Image (tube, rainbow, N blue to C red; front, side):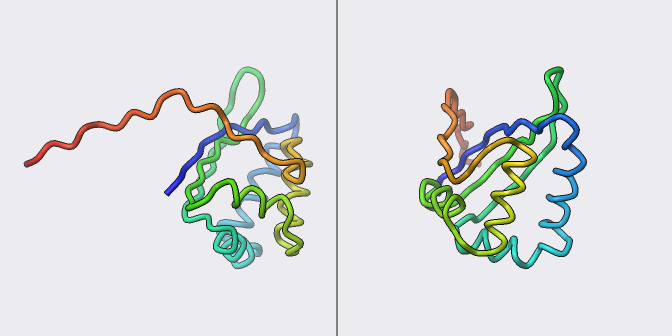
Length: 118
């Protein structure tokens, strides 16, 4: 299993648009299409938070899947209607063009506490 977390800037004035888009995916009219997309692209977990910062709001995203390179390639090239909508929304709200590829963030630490036997 692979995982990645990253921060995506939210363009000025677009935070409520991001909230509404994510609500439509989590429990709104796009929920079924969202879940189908994630299954098609091998995503087993996805979580999103909005983090206010002095430089503006960012979306903090966490994704798990078996092959994240294939996941991002698929999200960037799929012709499925939901995936096309998702790419357009990501471009309009975050200024990120998934069709151009998505370089992974540089991981600096991956601490895991040692398990102790009881």
